[in-house]
Image (cartoon, rainbow, N blue to C red; front, side):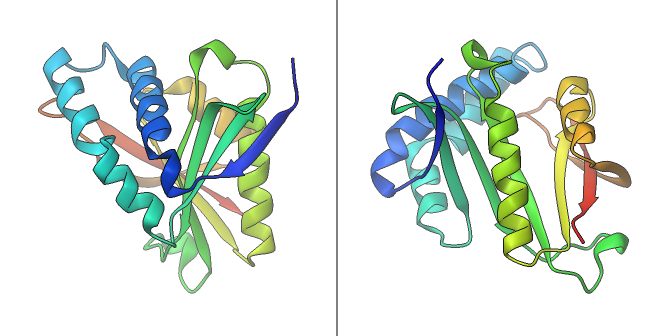
Length: 175
């Protein structure tokens, strides 16, 4: 396999991002909600206009993982103030999305993206990294725990359309 490279997204990448975001989210969560709820969610949150606005927002940091200049995964994170008790008065960063195309699972791409995220966070002086993950996504929870993320008592509703779902939060101290 060729080397994995990372590249910051630009506004010209929005169509590619929309396609990979829809496909990876669908692959990860199809079967957890109705087909109509999934279709509505993908069109609402991963349409080109919504993603264009996110890429244009300087606080949102989007990067592609590429192999031979072909995007095979992506990451989105941002510095944000957290309400977690563990994060009070600390500089925090949130991992919003980390997805890899299913054909590339197990090839080190998620690790490359996570290593990049954590290095970025430390270089920016962040003290706490946190993320939300679906309460039944054991594979992702295991992955994050290998990087030292620990469960908190924080949860939030993350419905897909009319299908109720809950995200649990994980947190990692960086300093």
